[in-house]
Image (cartoon, rainbow, N blue to C red):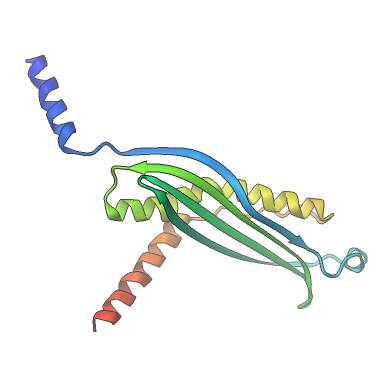
Length: 164
């Protein structure tokens, strides 16, 4: 009886592809810091206004191997429209992913992988800002699942409009 259950389990497992996910590498693809008003900015009252731009993209490097790039750009003004500093990072990762259907693969590349990369990008931004002699810039966590769901809704709406 136990052998029969093991054989059934093995047979069922053979019909379904094994899902595989492995992080191969995390690296900085691009890093930039600019403080166009220094050193004068250090003598003014500090009243920062932060604007954050976030973007992701991915590409297939080879079968089952994907690069995901999370781009963060933080632009800080000091109470007026003059830019105090801009800190940008493109944090990338190489992921081995197999056995997912198309929808699950889109979600993994569009939400799960960026979620892994975000703490590294946040640390890189904070480090850049500190090296520029500004107070730490601790970015709040990002809900990549919600962002992905919004992007999917837009994609579906655009697809329906194209069909009409």
